[in-house]
Image (cartoon, rainbow, N blue to C red):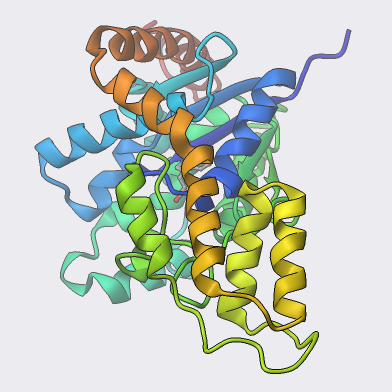
Length: 335
Ligand code: TRP
């Protein structure tokens, strides 16, 4: 029997999950755990590149675990763990750094962006972000890495580092992982501010969170950007209006969408009604997540159990990899 491909992805613990994250990534993870051997982890080592304080780091990591569980990741199906629970990752990262070159690391787009954004803190961890990410991936001997477009260059470097290791030591040891880009397959979720996609950096009011309370959702939706309304029959919808319709398409029944579409096309639409409906449907959609998040937030014992379980499995694999890598490189067996 052919072995199932190993799927792995890392999650940056920054902020709360919003509808854009859910439809853009998490929903896909939830689907993949049904058919693949999956590893999903919180990239908390990577967070140190931006120097968080210990309390923030801890509470962010905890919140992300809770929200991903609430969103449907199942610890019985996928292995969920914290990057920092696998210290072997750091040893493999050290080995990979010995064969990673300044020139190639400096050319990475995310590095250049970060260096521009935090000129007072261009640390070596930022420069070697791609080798740490490569270590995360190949330590579990992953084949498929579901990531967004912004991570493709990192994935390309992972492939380079894995190939380089195999070539250098004349082994066929690391599988060469592939980026699994699902950007095209999934619906782009627009924000509420009239342009672009939903994101938390776009300002207060743009994103609706899975753990957001109904009152706050309603307020945000009622404040969403619109215009003065259609003046001609069947006219094309300007971006802010199209955005509201696109949101409606993912949370509302199709005859609801049709109803408002028709009202737009014959110029009888009232945006207040559209927003009220949209708010209600978003609230219905997020309600189970909202409840689950609140429930899990009170269950420290369960959260601990989940991450202990994940760490145990992921760490056993990682130890095996590093043990073999040490041998390939020519170090003594120590574990
Ligand atoms: N760099 C990824 C991001 O910013 C997070 C990440 C860390 C990751 N290690 C990974 C993703 C390994 C996939 C595989 O989103």
